[in-house]
Structure formats: structure tokens, C-alpha cells
Image (cartoon, rainbow, N blue to C red):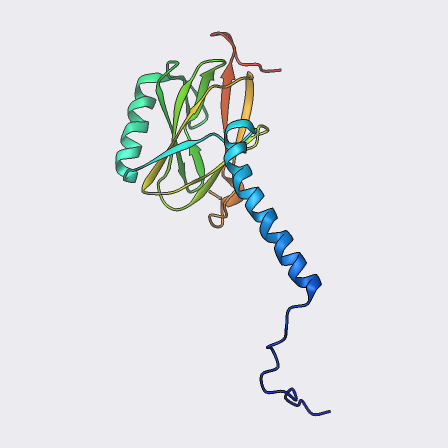
Length: 185
Ligand code: CUA
């Protein structure tokens, strides 16, 4: 069977069927509703933290992180410093191929300014099991004001594909209760 052109040259110019038009209108109205729901959920829903973003070079960011690490490291786990910055302070977490650096130890019910940036290319910060997800880019730092509400050990996984070691890019964060020890059992 040969492939033949449509009999009408302008084959696509057809009136829109009523049912199709109805669905277009429904989809459009739903889109508008969801648009305004974003604003509502931002305030009332259990959303990711609102963040601020600033330009910063990887060198500047790593210097600030290193200053925090030098001042507030309390112990080491393997090669990783465990850093316990004072409540209310700026805390830094470096994303790079393929690790989250350092391990942060925060106090429950205290607020911190968490700064995130990448040293190389894009990574995804995913805090588990609370499921906070943000993209981490080189050249920018994201700053989130956070107040941990549960003590324990939290996992950080990278959820943006970043090369051959992506699946090994896991880190952790401790939240301790009232200056006590980590909820380790
Ligand atoms: Cu970093 Cu995937």
C-alpha cells in the first residue's frame, strides 16, 4: 500500500469539537487554580523551606565552610569532621563529587542558617526521611533558615545525577536534643 497525502491540502484546519474544547477549558481553569494554590501552599502547606539565593564562587564558599569547620569541629568520623556550630549561626554544607562535606551536628529546636553550594556541578540535596529537596548549584549559594524539630540521624542523598559516583554521594546530619548525645540506638 502506498503512502498517499490527505485528500484536502489544508487537512488540519478543522473546527474544534465541542468535547475537545470542553477539556481545554477544564485544563486551563485547573491550571489557574493550581497556580494560585502554589501561593497558598507556600504559606499553609508542608512545603520545602523558602530559600534565598546569592552569587558566590566555589572558592569563597569553601573558605567560609572551612572557617566553620576549623572553629567548631567536635570529633571525626573517618575522614569526615563532625561540626557543631552554635545555635543561630550560619552553617555551611559543601556539595562536591561525590560527597557532602562536612557532617553537621545541630541542636533540636534551635534555628540555623543553612548555606548550600556546589564546588563543581549540579547536585541535589535531599534530606531523608523528612524529604526536603533542593537543587544545589555551583556559583550560587542557597540559604535556608531551618529549625530541626526532631532529634536523630538524618541521611543526605544526592538526587540529581552527577556522574559515575552519583549513587555514592551520601552524607548525614545529626540533630541532638538539648546538648545531649545523639539519639543513637
Ligand atoms: Cu551529586 Cu548526584
